[in-house]
View 1 (spheres, protein in one colour):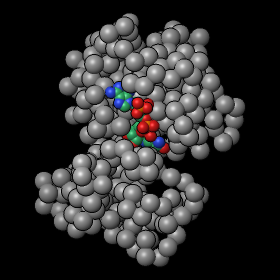
View 2 (tube, rainbow, N blue to C red):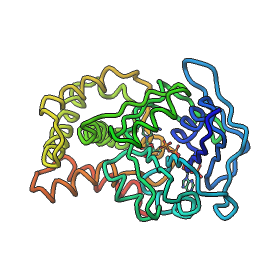
View 3 (cartoon, helix red, strand yellow):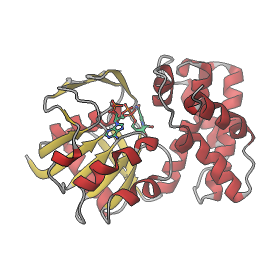
View 4 (cartoon, rainbow, N blue to C red):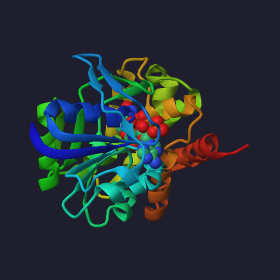
Length: 297
Ligand SMILES: NC(=O)c1ccc[n+]([C@@H]2O[C@H](COP(=O)([O-])OP(=O)(O)OC[C@H]3O[C@@H](n4cnc5c(N)ncnc54)[C@H](OP(=O)(O)O)[C@@H]3O)[C@@H](O)[C@H]2O)c1
């Protein structure tokens, strides 16, 4: 048993995955904080035993006891303001909020809700698919990259005993933008409605490389250290993925939910404009994603 209190805000695919890790790591208190009541969640890994989280999802921030030592925030980026009441209830000056989200703007997004608590951005690498509200399929090892600073190393100490890989990275900015590039490309899956098998098509591979190149140009302007050839590496990695592998933005599209388009694709266009870097593929993709997500008609 580790004498640590942990709250997971957003117990969906990634939140439940890391709640299961925290449970296996033997944290003293684990609280699941959501907006839909669920009695138990099972995380079913393709390799290894399933973990059943029996405690149930709490839905009333007013009834929770804070502050906790760690908040693992795993709502979608655009859902962060909606989770603000949870964050205010659970954080104090000694809390660390690990932000398990895609995108590159973790700190700006979360800091307004945590009143001085430390915000630790994390890159999430493990594909996890919500099969239904009570079941998550985890298709790889739970894995995070975090900044190599005291809070990042403390998160590694907390979660490694539960079976997660947590890598503190000295050049975290580069890791963040490499993942963002992969996420931006996954926006193409929303338009095709296809899983990763589509990246094996030569035409999709060319489009992937074009989009990845513009993301890398923006990333470079932001100070990341990504060679242009990383675009071809990413296209090859995506083509080598299991053809039935999905993406959280594709799952949201299939379910008719609001998409995380601004944090994953809009950001390339916004930061490109800031630096004078052309983003022609994003200029087409972003309005299509936004309309698919947000248009009420
Ligand atoms: N899934 C993956 O494979 C994967 C991999 C890498 C990174 N990521 C990133 O990880 C983050 C989380 O993604 P996900 O796939 O885990 O999303 P998800 O399955 O949709 O889970 C989001 C969870 O947050 C809850 N939620 C929404 N609004 C809330 C609020 N106001 N208060 C409390 N809980 C709230 C949702 O509840 P409801 O059930 O009521 O909607 C759901 O339980 C995203 O940034 C995503 O891009 C995902």
